[in-house]
Amino acid sequence: MNKDFLSILDITKDELTEILTNAIYLKKLRKKGKLPEVLRGKSLAMIFEKSSTRTHISFEVGMNELGGHALFLSTRDLQIDRGEEIRDTARVASSYVSAVMIRAFKHTTIEEFAKYATIPVINGLSDQEHPCQILADLMTIKEHFGSMQGLRVAWVGDGNNVCNSLILSSALTGIRLSIACPKGFTPSKSILKKAKDNGSLIQLEPSPDDAVKDADVIVTDTWVSMGDENEREERLRAFKGYTVNEHLLSRASEDVWVLHCLPAHRGEEISNGVIDGNRSLVWDEAENRLHAQKALLIKLLKTK
Ligand code: CP
Ligand code: NVA
Image 1 (cartoon, helix red, strand yellow):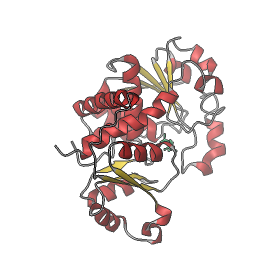
Image 2 (cartoon, helix red, strand yellow):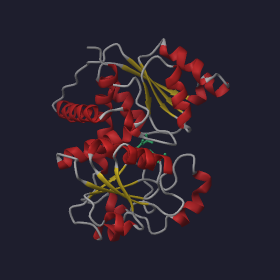
Image 3 (cartoon, rainbow, N blue to C red):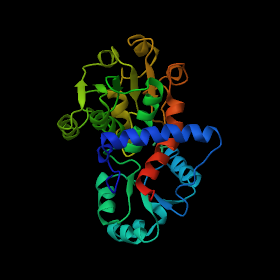
Image 4 (cartoon, helix red, strand yellow):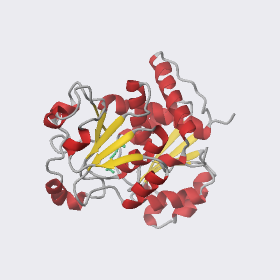
């Protein structure tokens, strides 16, 4: 296992299988009231440059349930805000805690932190990737379908950080991806190239209807990610017709399932009827952040 989890491609196919299998097992144990405290004495620093509900709560509760401890650190309150260098913060944090989870605007900030930290660093979302989210999404898919090989997943919306991690993950799962994004909002060429070089199976489609036609799962996310707020009006115009709503679901198989990482902007990228409807796996997906990240933390931190 790599020291860090900055990208979904920082784990191998076998490591992904192990993490997801353990996540499903930990979920079952928890439902029986059993919480194995295998990370007793370990601590996780959680550094946030941006807002969070799920990532913050699930990592903090996850560490506590594993017998460890988590610290919430907003960059507004750290010396980083007053100019202390990332590399100095990384060196110092390495002497106090067992691992660091960072949510940052720039992916390069997390990479720099990881370069100077001697402990595992986890990407809790950057402009480039959201690998922890994709662990939970894959866990949700595995729970519902048993296997991922050959499944068809359609991404409808912005070619953003969550989409990038999903694209890269296809190399590990054998999932076939159909992607529909408006012109100007497709995933970056470098991500598509990296994914294809690693064996991902990806098809860019001209419209949401084309993307969802044979899909087993439809995935979407906000059209205005954190940091894109000043483009909101332009984006709302560009994404017209990309809402995952009842009409789009009628173009897919009646067995299709829907994922959304949340937070949702109801009426924009997803309709109320779909997110609250009987094809939505969104609430399982959100819960699975907890289980998937516990399995990830064990993989990164447990000493044999
Ligand atoms: N999906 C997700 O990462 O949610 P938060 O922004 O609330 O952490
Ligand atoms: N793409 C979204 C995901 C939020 C969890 C963002 O970056 O804001």
